[in-house]
Image 1 (cartoon, rainbow, N blue to C red):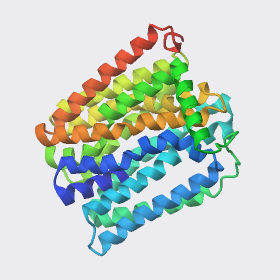
Image 2 (image 1 turned 90 degrees about the horizontal axis):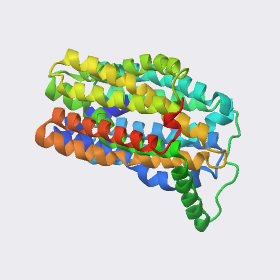
Image 3 (image 1 turned 45 degrees about the vertical axis):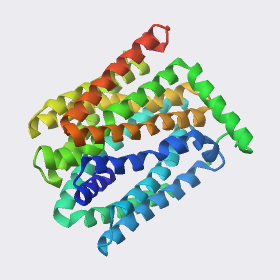
Length: 378
Protein backbone atom coordinates (compact mmCIF):
# COMPACT_ATOMS: atom_id res chain seq x y z
CA UNK A 1 0.00 0.00 0.00
CA UNK A 2 2.78 2.40 0.92
CA UNK A 3 4.66 1.76 -2.33
CA UNK A 4 1.64 2.53 -4.52
CA UNK A 5 0.60 5.59 -2.49
CA UNK A 6 4.08 7.12 -2.70
CA UNK A 7 4.31 6.25 -6.39
CA UNK A 8 0.96 7.88 -7.16
CA UNK A 9 1.95 10.98 -5.18
CA UNK A 10 5.21 11.20 -7.15
CA UNK A 11 3.29 10.88 -10.44
CA UNK A 12 0.85 13.61 -9.38
CA UNK A 13 3.70 15.93 -8.38
CA UNK A 14 5.90 15.38 -11.46
CA UNK A 15 3.92 13.65 -14.26
CA UNK A 16 7.09 11.72 -15.10
CA UNK A 17 7.85 7.95 -15.01
CA UNK A 18 11.48 8.85 -14.32
CA UNK A 19 10.72 10.71 -11.09
CA UNK A 20 8.31 7.98 -9.99
CA UNK A 21 11.20 5.53 -10.23
CA UNK A 22 13.54 7.98 -8.49
CA UNK A 23 11.27 7.78 -5.43
CA UNK A 24 11.45 4.00 -5.71
CA UNK A 25 15.24 4.31 -5.92
CA UNK A 26 15.39 6.34 -2.71
CA UNK A 27 13.10 3.83 -1.01
CA UNK A 28 15.41 0.92 -1.87
CA UNK A 29 18.98 2.21 -2.08
CA UNK A 30 19.57 2.05 1.72
CA UNK A 31 19.43 -1.73 1.35
CA UNK A 32 22.76 -1.65 -0.45
CA UNK A 33 24.47 0.69 2.00
CA UNK A 34 23.01 -0.68 5.22
CA UNK A 35 23.20 -4.27 4.01
CA UNK A 36 27.00 -4.21 3.87
CA UNK A 37 27.26 -3.64 7.61
CA UNK A 38 23.72 -4.46 8.66
CA UNK A 39 24.62 -7.59 10.61
CA UNK A 40 27.29 -5.72 12.55
CA UNK A 41 24.62 -3.23 13.60
CA UNK A 42 21.72 -5.57 14.26
CA UNK A 43 23.82 -8.19 16.07
CA UNK A 44 24.45 -5.68 18.86
CA UNK A 45 20.81 -5.56 19.94
CA UNK A 46 18.01 -7.88 20.93
CA UNK A 47 16.08 -8.44 17.77
CA UNK A 48 12.63 -7.71 19.17
CA UNK A 49 13.75 -4.35 20.57
CA UNK A 50 15.28 -3.37 17.24
CA UNK A 51 12.19 -4.16 15.15
CA UNK A 52 10.01 -2.21 17.58
CA UNK A 53 12.17 0.92 17.27
CA UNK A 54 12.33 0.61 13.49
CA UNK A 55 8.56 0.22 13.23
CA UNK A 56 8.16 3.43 15.23
CA UNK A 57 10.34 5.13 12.61
CA UNK A 58 7.99 3.91 9.87
CA UNK A 59 5.00 5.40 11.70
CA UNK A 60 6.73 8.75 12.12
CA UNK A 61 7.74 8.85 8.44
CA UNK A 62 4.21 8.23 7.17
CA UNK A 63 2.86 10.70 9.72
CA UNK A 64 5.21 13.44 8.50
CA UNK A 65 4.09 12.99 4.89
CA UNK A 66 0.44 13.10 5.97
CA UNK A 67 1.03 16.33 7.92
CA UNK A 68 2.83 18.04 5.01
CA UNK A 69 0.09 17.01 2.58
CA UNK A 70 -2.60 18.19 5.00
CA UNK A 71 -1.11 21.70 5.27
CA UNK A 72 -0.52 21.82 1.51
CA UNK A 73 3.28 21.98 1.71
CA UNK A 74 4.27 18.55 0.38
CA UNK A 75 6.99 18.75 -2.26
CA UNK A 76 8.87 16.13 -4.20
CA UNK A 77 12.00 16.50 -2.09
CA UNK A 78 9.96 15.77 1.04
CA UNK A 79 8.76 12.57 -0.59
CA UNK A 80 12.34 11.68 -1.48
CA UNK A 81 13.76 12.25 2.01
CA UNK A 82 11.04 10.28 3.75
CA UNK A 83 11.38 7.46 1.20
CA UNK A 84 15.09 7.34 1.96
CA UNK A 85 14.40 7.17 5.71
CA UNK A 86 11.77 4.45 5.30
CA UNK A 87 14.18 2.50 3.15
CA UNK A 88 16.85 2.69 5.85
CA UNK A 89 14.52 1.36 8.53
CA UNK A 90 13.36 -1.45 6.26
CA UNK A 91 16.96 -2.39 5.40
CA UNK A 92 17.58 -3.11 9.09
CA UNK A 93 14.13 -4.43 9.94
CA UNK A 94 13.73 -7.05 7.20
CA UNK A 95 16.79 -9.24 7.93
CA UNK A 96 16.29 -8.82 11.68
CA UNK A 97 12.73 -10.17 11.57
CA UNK A 98 13.75 -13.03 9.27
CA UNK A 99 16.69 -13.93 11.53
CA UNK A 100 14.25 -14.31 14.44
CA UNK A 101 12.22 -17.01 12.70
CA UNK A 102 14.45 -20.04 13.45
CA UNK A 103 14.69 -18.93 17.09
CA UNK A 104 10.91 -18.82 17.34
CA UNK A 105 10.02 -22.09 15.59
CA UNK A 106 13.29 -24.04 15.27
CA UNK A 107 15.20 -24.80 12.07
CA UNK A 108 13.14 -27.90 11.33
CA UNK A 109 10.02 -25.80 10.86
CA UNK A 110 11.61 -22.71 9.34
CA UNK A 111 10.28 -23.35 5.83
CA UNK A 112 6.79 -24.00 7.25
CA UNK A 113 7.03 -20.69 9.10
CA UNK A 114 8.08 -18.90 5.92
CA UNK A 115 5.10 -20.41 4.08
CA UNK A 116 2.80 -19.14 6.84
CA UNK A 117 4.38 -15.69 6.72
CA UNK A 118 3.94 -15.59 2.95
CA UNK A 119 0.28 -16.57 3.35
CA UNK A 120 -0.17 -13.46 5.48
CA UNK A 121 1.88 -11.36 3.08
CA UNK A 122 -0.09 -12.77 0.17
CA UNK A 123 -3.30 -11.57 1.79
CA UNK A 124 -1.89 -8.09 2.32
CA UNK A 125 -0.50 -7.98 -1.24
CA UNK A 126 -4.10 -8.34 -2.39
CA UNK A 127 -5.83 -6.06 0.09
CA UNK A 128 -3.03 -3.45 0.27
CA UNK A 129 -3.07 -2.34 -3.40
CA UNK A 130 -6.87 -2.45 -3.53
CA UNK A 131 -7.07 -0.40 -0.35
CA UNK A 132 -4.55 2.09 -1.73
CA UNK A 133 -6.51 2.56 -4.95
CA UNK A 134 -10.02 2.81 -3.51
CA UNK A 135 -9.03 4.89 -0.48
CA UNK A 136 -7.17 7.39 -2.68
CA UNK A 137 -10.14 7.53 -5.06
CA UNK A 138 -12.58 8.18 -2.19
CA UNK A 139 -10.50 10.12 0.33
CA UNK A 140 -7.47 11.31 -1.69
CA UNK A 141 -3.85 10.50 -0.95
CA UNK A 142 -4.13 12.11 2.48
CA UNK A 143 -6.68 9.52 3.56
CA UNK A 144 -4.38 6.74 2.36
CA UNK A 145 -1.44 8.16 4.32
CA UNK A 146 -3.53 8.40 7.47
CA UNK A 147 -4.54 4.75 7.03
CA UNK A 148 -0.84 3.87 6.73
CA UNK A 149 -0.15 5.66 10.00
CA UNK A 150 -2.95 3.73 11.70
CA UNK A 151 -1.72 0.40 10.34
CA UNK A 152 1.76 1.25 11.51
CA UNK A 153 0.50 1.76 15.05
CA UNK A 154 -1.31 -1.58 14.91
CA UNK A 155 1.92 -3.26 13.82
CA UNK A 156 3.78 -1.56 16.66
CA UNK A 157 1.23 -2.84 19.17
CA UNK A 158 1.56 -6.36 17.75
CA UNK A 159 5.35 -6.25 18.00
CA UNK A 160 5.12 -5.25 21.64
CA UNK A 161 3.81 -8.75 22.35
CA UNK A 162 7.04 -10.46 21.29
CA UNK A 163 8.61 -12.31 24.24
CA UNK A 164 11.70 -13.79 22.58
CA UNK A 165 15.16 -12.64 23.65
CA UNK A 166 16.59 -13.66 20.28
CA UNK A 167 20.01 -12.18 19.66
CA UNK A 168 23.09 -13.03 17.62
CA UNK A 169 25.39 -15.48 19.45
CA UNK A 170 28.17 -12.90 19.49
CA UNK A 171 28.08 -9.17 18.86
CA UNK A 172 30.74 -7.32 16.90
CA UNK A 173 33.46 -5.37 18.70
CA UNK A 174 35.17 -2.47 16.94
CA UNK A 175 35.39 -1.42 13.28
CA UNK A 176 38.23 -3.84 12.51
CA UNK A 177 36.14 -6.70 13.84
CA UNK A 178 33.15 -5.45 11.86
CA UNK A 179 35.12 -5.45 8.61
CA UNK A 180 36.46 -8.90 9.42
CA UNK A 181 32.96 -10.25 10.02
CA UNK A 182 31.68 -8.71 6.80
CA UNK A 183 34.46 -10.43 4.87
CA UNK A 184 33.74 -13.70 6.62
CA UNK A 185 30.08 -13.36 5.72
CA UNK A 186 30.85 -12.86 2.03
CA UNK A 187 33.26 -15.79 2.01
CA UNK A 188 30.62 -17.94 3.64
CA UNK A 189 28.02 -16.96 1.02
CA UNK A 190 30.36 -17.75 -1.86
CA UNK A 191 31.34 -21.10 -0.35
CA UNK A 192 27.72 -22.32 -0.29
CA UNK A 193 26.44 -23.04 -3.80
CA UNK A 194 22.80 -22.84 -2.72
CA UNK A 195 23.16 -19.52 -0.90
CA UNK A 196 25.34 -18.07 -3.66
CA UNK A 197 22.75 -19.06 -6.27
CA UNK A 198 20.04 -17.30 -4.23
CA UNK A 199 22.28 -14.25 -3.96
CA UNK A 200 22.87 -13.98 -7.73
CA UNK A 201 19.28 -14.63 -8.82
CA UNK A 202 18.04 -12.16 -6.21
CA UNK A 203 20.20 -9.50 -7.85
CA UNK A 204 18.88 -10.33 -11.32
CA UNK A 205 15.22 -10.31 -10.28
CA UNK A 206 15.48 -7.12 -8.24
CA UNK A 207 17.41 -5.23 -10.93
CA UNK A 208 15.49 -6.36 -14.01
CA UNK A 209 12.11 -7.81 -12.97
CA UNK A 210 10.69 -6.17 -9.87
CA UNK A 211 11.14 -2.47 -10.85
CA UNK A 212 7.83 -2.87 -12.69
CA UNK A 213 6.03 -2.53 -9.35
CA UNK A 214 6.82 1.15 -8.91
CA UNK A 215 5.72 1.78 -12.52
CA UNK A 216 2.18 0.52 -11.86
CA UNK A 217 0.85 4.09 -11.37
CA UNK A 218 2.22 4.92 -14.82
CA UNK A 219 0.63 1.83 -16.37
CA UNK A 220 -2.69 2.55 -14.69
CA UNK A 221 -2.97 6.22 -15.62
CA UNK A 222 -0.96 6.66 -18.81
CA UNK A 223 -1.12 3.22 -20.50
CA UNK A 224 -4.59 1.93 -19.59
CA UNK A 225 -6.35 5.23 -18.79
CA UNK A 226 -7.35 4.09 -15.29
CA UNK A 227 -7.51 5.95 -11.99
CA UNK A 228 -6.21 4.90 -8.56
CA UNK A 229 -8.69 2.00 -8.51
CA UNK A 230 -7.15 0.54 -11.66
CA UNK A 231 -3.71 0.88 -10.12
CA UNK A 232 -4.97 -1.01 -7.10
CA UNK A 233 -6.24 -3.89 -9.23
CA UNK A 234 -2.92 -4.13 -11.07
CA UNK A 235 -1.12 -4.45 -7.76
CA UNK A 236 -3.69 -6.89 -6.39
CA UNK A 237 -3.54 -9.16 -9.46
CA UNK A 238 0.06 -10.03 -8.68
CA UNK A 239 -0.92 -10.55 -5.05
CA UNK A 240 -3.73 -12.94 -6.05
CA UNK A 241 -1.22 -14.97 -8.05
CA UNK A 242 1.27 -15.03 -5.20
CA UNK A 243 -1.45 -16.16 -2.79
CA UNK A 244 -2.52 -19.07 -4.99
CA UNK A 245 1.14 -19.83 -5.69
CA UNK A 246 1.72 -20.52 -2.00
CA UNK A 247 -0.36 -23.71 -2.24
CA UNK A 248 1.53 -24.76 -5.37
CA UNK A 249 4.88 -24.20 -3.67
CA UNK A 250 3.78 -26.15 -0.60
CA UNK A 251 2.71 -29.05 -2.82
CA UNK A 252 5.86 -28.80 -4.92
CA UNK A 253 8.06 -29.23 -1.86
CA UNK A 254 7.12 -32.93 -1.86
CA UNK A 255 8.88 -33.58 -5.16
CA UNK A 256 11.26 -30.67 -5.78
CA UNK A 257 14.18 -29.25 -3.84
CA UNK A 258 13.97 -25.76 -2.37
CA UNK A 259 16.53 -24.62 -4.94
CA UNK A 260 14.53 -25.92 -7.90
CA UNK A 261 11.39 -24.25 -6.62
CA UNK A 262 13.30 -20.99 -6.25
CA UNK A 263 14.64 -21.06 -9.83
CA UNK A 264 11.33 -22.17 -11.34
CA UNK A 265 9.41 -19.48 -9.50
CA UNK A 266 11.85 -16.81 -10.66
CA UNK A 267 11.45 -17.87 -14.30
CA UNK A 268 7.65 -17.91 -14.14
CA UNK A 269 7.64 -14.47 -12.54
CA UNK A 270 9.81 -13.07 -15.35
CA UNK A 271 7.76 -14.72 -18.11
CA UNK A 272 4.55 -13.33 -16.63
CA UNK A 273 6.00 -9.82 -16.72
CA UNK A 274 6.94 -10.22 -20.39
CA UNK A 275 3.30 -11.13 -21.06
CA UNK A 276 2.15 -8.14 -19.00
CA UNK A 277 4.28 -5.76 -21.05
CA UNK A 278 2.80 -7.13 -24.29
CA UNK A 279 -0.81 -7.44 -23.11
CA UNK A 280 -2.25 -4.32 -24.71
CA UNK A 281 -5.43 -4.40 -22.64
CA UNK A 282 -6.21 -3.92 -18.98
CA UNK A 283 -7.96 -7.30 -18.62
CA UNK A 284 -5.12 -9.32 -20.13
CA UNK A 285 -2.60 -7.39 -18.07
CA UNK A 286 -4.38 -8.55 -14.91
CA UNK A 287 -4.09 -12.18 -16.04
CA UNK A 288 -0.40 -11.81 -16.83
CA UNK A 289 0.33 -10.19 -13.47
CA UNK A 290 -1.57 -13.04 -11.80
CA UNK A 291 0.70 -15.54 -13.59
CA UNK A 292 3.78 -13.56 -12.57
CA UNK A 293 2.56 -13.67 -8.97
CA UNK A 294 2.34 -17.46 -9.12
CA UNK A 295 6.06 -17.58 -9.80
CA UNK A 296 6.90 -14.86 -7.33
CA UNK A 297 5.48 -17.05 -4.55
CA UNK A 298 8.24 -19.60 -5.15
CA UNK A 299 10.84 -16.87 -5.33
CA UNK A 300 9.72 -15.17 -2.12
CA UNK A 301 9.34 -18.25 0.05
CA UNK A 302 12.51 -20.00 -0.99
CA UNK A 303 14.68 -16.90 -1.14
CA UNK A 304 14.92 -16.62 2.63
CA UNK A 305 14.14 -20.25 3.44
CA UNK A 306 17.20 -21.58 1.64
CA UNK A 307 19.48 -19.20 3.53
CA UNK A 308 17.86 -19.74 6.92
CA UNK A 309 18.03 -23.51 6.53
CA UNK A 310 21.52 -23.74 5.04
CA UNK A 311 23.31 -21.11 7.16
CA UNK A 312 24.78 -21.90 10.57
CA UNK A 313 23.48 -20.04 13.61
CA UNK A 314 26.62 -17.89 13.78
CA UNK A 315 26.46 -16.91 10.11
CA UNK A 316 22.68 -16.56 9.75
CA UNK A 317 22.56 -12.81 10.31
CA UNK A 318 25.52 -12.17 8.00
CA UNK A 319 24.06 -14.34 5.26
CA UNK A 320 20.76 -12.45 5.53
CA UNK A 321 22.65 -9.16 5.34
CA UNK A 322 24.28 -10.37 2.13
CA UNK A 323 20.79 -11.04 0.79
CA UNK A 324 19.83 -7.48 1.73
CA UNK A 325 22.80 -6.24 -0.31
CA UNK A 326 21.58 -8.30 -3.27
CA UNK A 327 18.14 -6.73 -2.95
CA UNK A 328 19.82 -3.35 -2.45
CA UNK A 329 21.35 -3.45 -5.92
CA UNK A 330 17.80 -3.40 -7.27
CA UNK A 331 17.34 0.39 -7.09
CA UNK A 332 19.74 0.81 -10.00
CA UNK A 333 17.25 -1.22 -12.02
CA UNK A 334 14.55 1.25 -11.02
CA UNK A 335 16.61 4.09 -12.49
CA UNK A 336 17.22 2.04 -15.64
CA UNK A 337 13.54 1.23 -16.07
CA UNK A 338 12.59 4.84 -15.31
CA UNK A 339 14.91 6.15 -17.99
CA UNK A 340 13.71 3.53 -20.51
CA UNK A 341 10.07 4.28 -19.70
CA UNK A 342 10.66 8.01 -20.13
CA UNK A 343 12.21 7.46 -23.59
CA UNK A 344 10.47 4.38 -25.02
CA UNK A 345 7.45 3.88 -22.80
CA UNK A 346 6.70 1.77 -19.75
CA UNK A 347 5.69 -1.32 -21.76
CA UNK A 348 9.03 -1.64 -23.56
CA UNK A 349 10.96 -0.92 -20.36
CA UNK A 350 9.24 -3.66 -18.38
CA UNK A 351 9.29 -6.22 -21.22
CA UNK A 352 12.96 -5.86 -22.10
CA UNK A 353 14.09 -5.95 -18.49
CA UNK A 354 11.93 -9.00 -17.68
CA UNK A 355 13.50 -10.88 -20.61
CA UNK A 356 16.95 -10.02 -19.25
CA UNK A 357 15.92 -11.28 -15.79
CA UNK A 358 14.70 -14.60 -17.20
CA UNK A 359 17.79 -15.19 -19.32
CA UNK A 360 20.07 -14.27 -16.43
CA UNK A 361 18.25 -16.65 -14.09
CA UNK A 362 18.66 -19.49 -16.59
CA UNK A 363 22.36 -18.73 -16.94
CA UNK A 364 22.91 -18.83 -13.17
CA UNK A 365 20.84 -21.99 -12.74
CA UNK A 366 22.66 -23.92 -15.45
CA UNK A 367 25.99 -22.65 -14.17
CA UNK A 368 25.23 -24.02 -10.72
CA UNK A 369 23.87 -27.26 -12.16
CA UNK A 370 27.16 -27.93 -13.88
CA UNK A 371 28.95 -27.71 -10.55
CA UNK A 372 26.80 -30.51 -9.11
CA UNK A 373 25.07 -28.23 -6.57
CA UNK A 374 21.84 -29.05 -4.72
CA UNK A 375 19.95 -27.65 -7.73
CA UNK A 376 20.50 -31.00 -9.41
CA UNK A 377 19.23 -32.96 -6.44
CA UNK A 378 15.71 -33.78 -5.36
